[in-house]
Image (cartoon, rainbow, N blue to C red):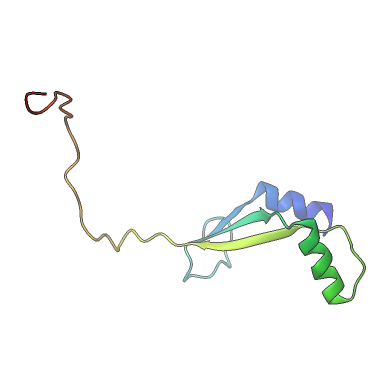
Length: 89
């Protein structure tokens, strides 16, 4: 992966409708994180592909789904905490 691509994902780790006009309308945001692959797994991947090892970077892309419309219940906020012991002990 070219150096400029690694720099791009370091600067922009989240894609949404504001910063990416072609972002899918069904996903509110997508996060791109660098994924640490163990050396043994990298070796297995490259050998499975039949290619000698090349320096590489792996990324994990995950949707960030905001479920604000799916509130199950609202609770009354705690306004006071009584730290006195109960009972005679």
